[in-house]
Structure formats: C-alpha cells, structure tokens
Image 1: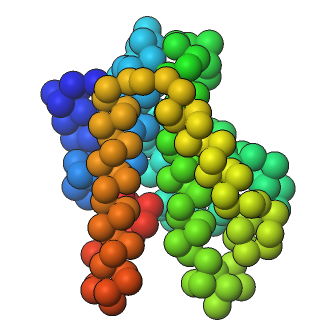
Image 2: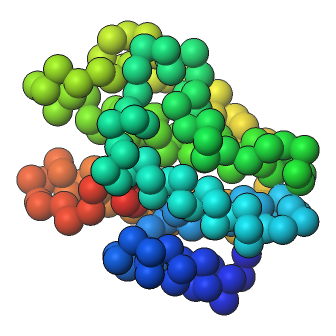
Length: 181
C-alpha cells in the first residue's frame, strides 16, 4: 500500500467517524494487509476491515468486548475484522494477523491493573492465556515472512509502544489510548 492509497482510505474513515486517524498505526496495518497480500480488490477489503475496527471501538464496543468464549484464540473476538486467506498470499495474511494479535496481546497486558480494578474480564488476569507463549508464537509468525511494508509498520508500532511504556514508567501523561497506537 502506498501513501496515496492510505490517505484515500483513511480520509474516507476520517470523514465517516469525524476523527483524524491518519497516524493510527493499527488502522494502517489493517489497511495494508490486502495490498501486501495481493488481493484482487484491496481497497474494498481494506475499507471494510477498517470500518469493522472502528466499530469495535465505538458505541458498539461492548458487543466486541472479550469474553471467556473468546479465550480459544488471540484473534477469536475480532474474526469479523480478519481477512480470508483464500483472497491472497496466505503467508502475508498470517503475518498481518499475527501483528494484529500481538497488538491485542499487548493491549491486554497494558490493561491488567485497570481491568483488575474494574472487574473487567481479561484473559491474562484470568490466567486463560499465557502471555509469554502466545507472544513467542506470534513473533515467530511475524518474523517467518518478510514484507517490507508490514515490517516497517510493525517497527513503527513497536517503537511507539516502547516510548509509551517508557513514558508510563516515568509517570508522564500519555495522550493516546492504547488501541489508537
């Protein structure tokens, strides 16, 4: 996905949701997957998944919240936002999904104390998931296949998360919600 394609898609989403999401790395990763995997209609597929992602963070958020039934797989609760592997390069799609899974896993980890305090279900708190084994598996999938664009986006996300963790450790106010990274 080139920058013009990204700006076109995020412009549509910005218009619909009344927010500037052009710096949202997670949304950019979601949008990039069908382009990088060689889908026949990457813009259509990307926009549909971008809308699904935005719906999960909107007024419909409670419908997309994690429940114990979702514990079977890191990606279970976001199946509506995932790409069908028959539409393009399966290895690239799996890599993209693994990156999204890692984003989710880190979000669950980041929210542990807040979720404990609010009695909010979190599979890491309930011990349904082992953070290290899931993380190792996701990283193995991510690093198995090279794709310059997805690798670059992953690196940007990783560096942003690392900076956020550093700021949190120093008690510096962080402006972004975790899912907006």
